[in-house]
Image (cartoon, rainbow, N blue to C red; front, top):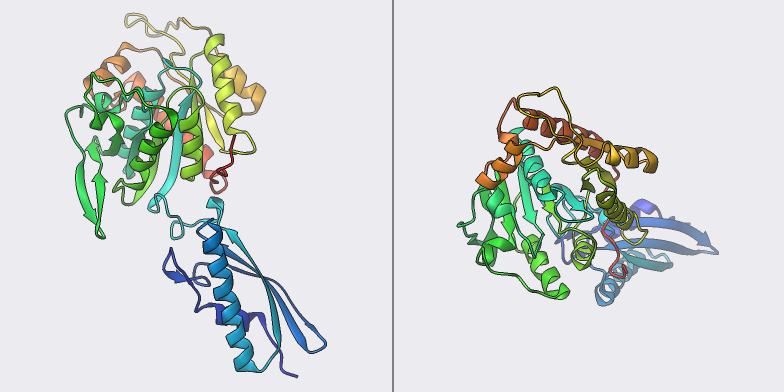
Length: 372
């Protein structure tokens, strides 16, 4: 009696093309043979096929293409083959750079969040990006703080405008580059003194275009400066891009920590499930220039560190309240550029710890579109 092997089934499916990715489903590792049995001369195969598109009609077309390929195999071998095909969407945690549709050339995507405004989240984002670029990495930055974009100021590119770029017959947005960092911000498309008054859906759509229409190319790291709090932009982001993790910034005092806890808990929701890479305590202490060994804890002491220990969240480190950090941000030259200073050393240590935690994280996931 002629036999049927898993290898024969895989070979038959190597001619089925994933339409959105343009390669065969075997080469993309989208085929799983769940079982192959023979009962009274009839072979029965159960297959699970992953599709890059979650749309029902796309999955139905994929199912039909697989069934047709198995019918051809049956005709060529003279065997009777019944096939049960399950087509499921390809989860972002299963996507390689080859199969990812949004930001396919970006290795790690890290969001920087805060529970409330004014804790220095954007300052931390800018300095992390510059420090990563200083180390030779290819770095991108998206200013997702739609209503209060600050990255153009922090990188001294307020008057710059992204230029259109033609790629594959499609018009893309060319990011502005400064200090070795590619960036896009809503601030580039509005007057600096103009208030951006958008409802949630409009803000989410604009944010999406920075990712999908930006000509980002290949990057080692992309940092995303989120707006403070929890809301539509955060949910849209985790549904759109495969985040490697999030860094939460807070100051030590209780009122800031209360909001930081909400931010952490949001990313830990089952429907969102983004790894929290760690917590940063900003404005941790002040040392007078004439007494560098003295530390004054103006906003409380070790509040973020204690919360990190109690919650089992990594503590990435503390940044001092230093006038030079503020001045550097206002001047468009982030403090990470000032080698050898207290600020630059603190930022370098923070970056080291973040990268150490990132190495141990599993592949990223995108939250389902039904997130609350």
